[in-house]
Image (tube, rainbow, N blue to C red; front, side):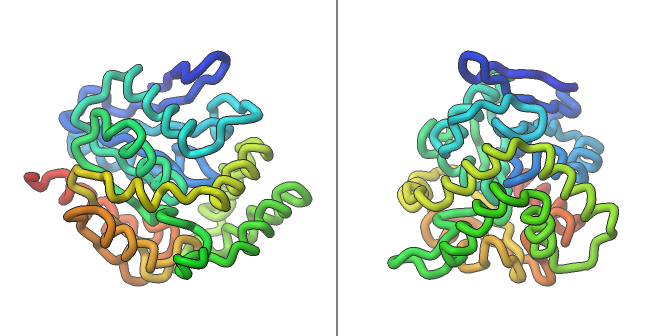
Length: 273
């Protein structure tokens, strides 16, 4: 069931609500440069176990509005709050992949975890996607600058190059082409603007320390986008977080280790706090 939620004047966020009568709710925030469909395997399987799965398209991506501005983590987390309030979500698990994980972390800090009972981070782009003088564990800054430049000059080739590094294990040409198409559905300016956000955002270091709900960190040991040391930094900063390293697994862990991913997520949700 699809909805459009008004986040601010003339900006609407698309939401897919699967099994709205489910016993427990999971709100998924996708990563760059895809949309809510990246969690297809979760939408196909988790409702069978009684879960309600809510997936949103962040602004500029998928079916959501494509404004020129508003691609910083503050505004993106405010869009999530608009979805939470519109659907009146309570006691839900908030899950975010890659950039979506960073947005989820900002939501927890900026909105004090409004409605969230548990947090799940999937290869989250936090506390910093890029290397900094005090945080040498991310990607070289030039790698992100190349992505931005590629977005402006040859976005399809940039997306193909990105698609070549997101999996550790073999996937079919069909899967690869499908994810490529999801990236093309995004607006070019949103694709570049979110990439720029990676360069300037440093507040996530503080945000991690504010999280007070049970937190699961799922991260592939072979991730070439959000390198595994990011997961170690998240585990160190978030009080009582649980880190589950996934072997033989890259950045798109929900496909590289799709069965294990769902098993770990369900186990975490069902654990008593």
